[in-house]
Every structure is written in structure tokens, then in C-alpha cells.
Image (cartoon, rainbow over all chains, first blue to last red; front, side, top):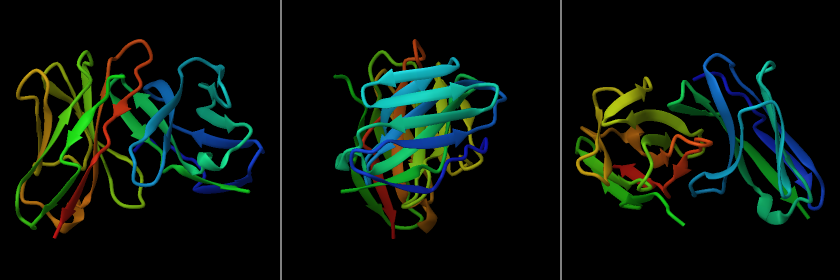
Length: 109
Length: 114
């Protein structure tokens, strides 16, 4: 539901920077979250944006433009352990999280 | 650090049987959720629960499913008459609602219907 779109898969090199984009329907929007999910494990929280702009947390940053229905997750100084799926999730109407299909990130040596 | 716990970690059941998946949310949280993830697919919203009642449910959450908060700590998902296509990871999550509303996930129950 809610047409949350993100690329299916991306590949990047260890030490590089990668940007994962997410677009979503804006009606009822109450916040956007990025989660990391390793295969067979639960999603773990990375970041939260509710206002426009960039939120930085160590090697990870997340950007939001509410008017455009657009966010990105920026990962710097990539490490092999960053290989995982990155899930964009949007909170609608204060009580429902919808997830995108996830972007599988492959980090190469 | 407080965490959401789910039991069992893996459940195998025969088609047509009923299963109950159990979750203990973080103690001061107010919003509770169930999600499922079929192998290789996206995380899908099933239901949200607030103030002892369902606040939202998806089209997946039909009469086969029900949720309950039988006491102050547990939050359960019951699946009646299981089908093969119910095989998935089921994640429970909880949220405090403030200040930033993120959902914390349990480690999931892998349900296999045979």
C-alpha cells in the first residue's frame, strides 16, 4: 500500500558513498523511517525524518523533502557489514507503518 | 536495553490448524503492530493496536486473523485454519508514540505451514 518505491538492488565498493532513494505518497504522512535488515533477521531502526532536511548520525544520513514525497539514505565509508537490505518505511495517520520493498545493498571489496 | 520479544522463534504447523504467535512489547509502549514477511518479499503491514482495540488493519488481515492483549504484557496474533501461503516470518513491533514514533521490532516467528 501507499506506493513506497525504492530501487530493488544496488552495488557499491567498500569505502565508497552510496545513496538509496525512496519516494512515497504524501497524503497522511507523519514521518519517514529507514531500517536495516540482514537476511533472516528483524529490521533495525536507523533514522527518522519528519521535517524537511538532513539528519546525520555517524556514517549514516537521511534526507527528507515532504513536498516532493522523497527521501534518501546516505551511507558513507561503506563497510562490508553494511551489506543488507535497507527498508524505507512511512508512518501514515499516526498508527500505520508501510514499508517499501527494500533495497538490497551489496558491498564489494 | 528494552526489547520486543517473540515466541516461539519457529513454529511448524499442519495446514488447517490454528496457531498463536506471542509477543511481549516494550513495557511503556502504547502502539503495537504485527507484520509479516514472506521469504524474499517485502515487510507487509497486518494490523495496529492501540488502547485495547484494533486501530488499523490491512486487506491481508481478514477473518482468519485476530489479535488480543490478554493481560498487561502480552500481545498475540491468532491465525485460524492456516494455509500453505501463511508461511512467513511474523514480526511484532511496538512504539511509544512519542517523541519520534519509531517501531521497535521483535526477532520474529518463522511460521511454516506444511
